[in-house]
Image 1 (cartoon, rainbow, N blue to C red):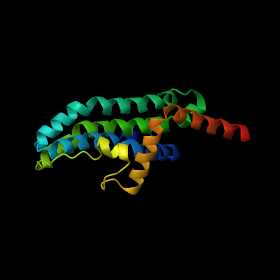
Image 2: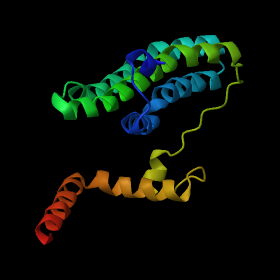
Image 3: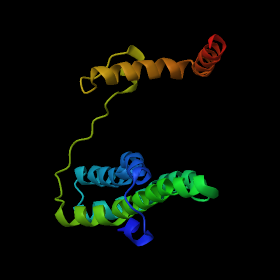
Image 4: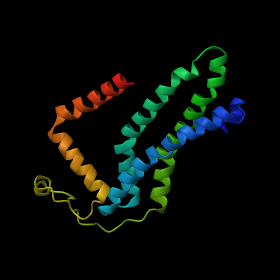
Amino acid sequence: MIFKLLGFSFNFMVAFGLLLALGMLIDGAIVVVEYADRQRNLGMSAKRAYGIAIRRMWSPVMSSTVTTLLVFLPLMLWPGTTGEFMAYLPVTVFAVLVWSLIYALWVAPILGSLFGKAKPPKPSQPMVNEANYEQNRWPEQLTRAGTIYARVSGVLIRHPMWSLVAPNMLLLSIFLVY
C-alpha cells in the first residue's frame, strides 16, 4: 500500500528491504505479547495484562525500532544516481518497521485482550538458585545447549578482563596472519 502511494514498483531493492526487515518485523510484538503472557500466567485478566504490557513495554519497543530506523535514515538522504537506486531499501525498511510498531503497540494488544483468556496462576520456581551456580549443578529445565551457554557465560563473567582481551587478541592475530 505504501509503495503504491509512493509510486514505487516492486523491484530488487524493495524485495531486499523486505527480506532485511523481515527479521525485525515481529520483535516488538513478541516483547509485548510475552510480557502480557507473563502477567496472564500470574492470573491477571487478558485486558489488564495487555494494558500493563503496553505501558511497560512501550518505551523499549519504541526505542529499539527508532534506533533501527535511524540507522537507515542516511541512506534515504543519499544524493545522486546511487541515492535514487538505494532509496528503495530504507523506504521499505521504514515502512515495514513503522507498520510493525503499529502492530506491536496497538493491534496485537487489542487482539490479545479480545481473544485472550486468563490463565490460572502457576507457582513461580526459580530456574537456578545460588547453590546450583556455585556447585555447577544445572536444573533439568535447561537444554544441553542452554547448559553449555550457562557454563561458558559463568566462566566469562568470573574472568571479565580475559573475556575482553581474548577476542581482541584473536581479532588482531587474524588481521596479522592475513
